[in-house]
Length: 190
Image 1 (cartoon, helix red, strand yellow):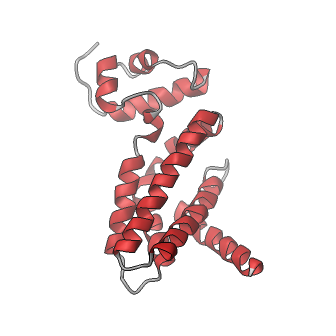
Image 2 (tube, rainbow, N blue to C red; image 1 turned 135 degrees about the vertical axis):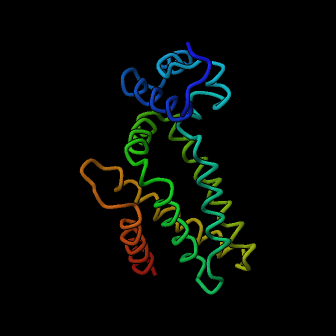
Image 3 (cartoon, rainbow, N blue to C red; image 1 turned 90 degrees about the horizontal axis):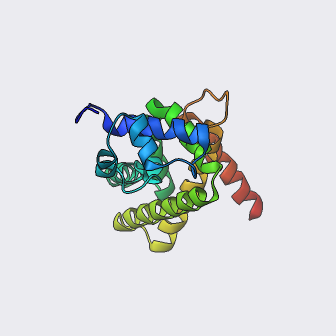
C-alpha cells in the first residue's frame, strides 16, 4: 500500500459511504474503510477519531463558516435575517458542490438512530454557537436563542427537501420557502 496519495479525506469519506451503502454503518469497520480507500488505518485515524466522524467531520467547518458570516453581516439586519443570510452563503460555499455526498450522508444518518442522535447533538451545538454570536452582536440572549432555533428549524426543513430524490433546486432556493412556512405557522399560532 503506498504511503501517500492525495485527497485522503475525500477518499476515506467516499469509501465509507460506499461501504455504509453496501453493508450498513454498524457492520462496517475502520479497517474496511481504510482498505477500500487504499490507505492505512493509521491514516484514517490521522483524519478521524472514529468511523462516525467520517459523517460528521465537516461540522466544525460549517459552524466556523456560519459564525463568521453572521459576524460579518450588516448590524442593521434583524437577527433571524443575519442567520438566514449566513446559512445561504455557507450552503452555496460548502454544500452545493458536494450535494451527492451530503445526500448519501443524510441517508446513512436517517437509517441509524445512534447517528440521528449525534446529528441532533451537532445541530444543538451549532444553534448555541449561532445564539452566542448573535448575543455578541448585541442581541438579547432570549431573542438570540429564538432566532438561532428558528433559523435552524427552517434550515432543517429546507435540507430535508433538498435531499429528496429528484429535487433540483439549491438549498439557498429552498430556504426562503421553509422560512415562509415557519412564519405562517407562527402567525397562525398567535
